[in-house]
Length: 104
Image (cartoon, rainbow, N blue to C red; front, side):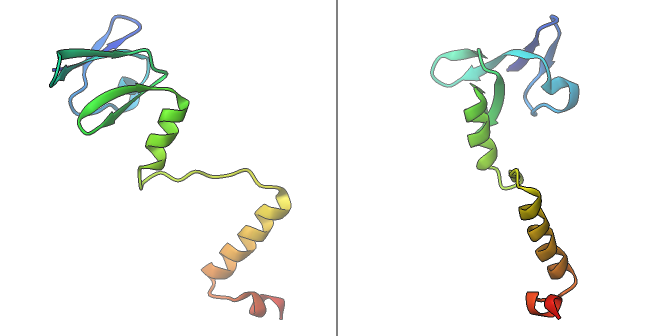
């Protein structure tokens, strides 16, 4: 049993993960637990699913989870000059040019 409880009294099944509107407004998750029988997961700003179980986490826990996911990458703020340098390299790579060829 995995049930999601929302702030407006709505409930949903959490067995297969959550997407779209079902991933918003979560307040608690009721799930089976091998040691205590049934567990209520609550008190987190975010809820993550790992190894078939839900966990309540803060922003740091969410970042840890995302960084461990090979399908998620984090960007970084750059100055305009740094960004232009990166984009020049990217465009050169796209067109098969080297830095030396660009300077000609």
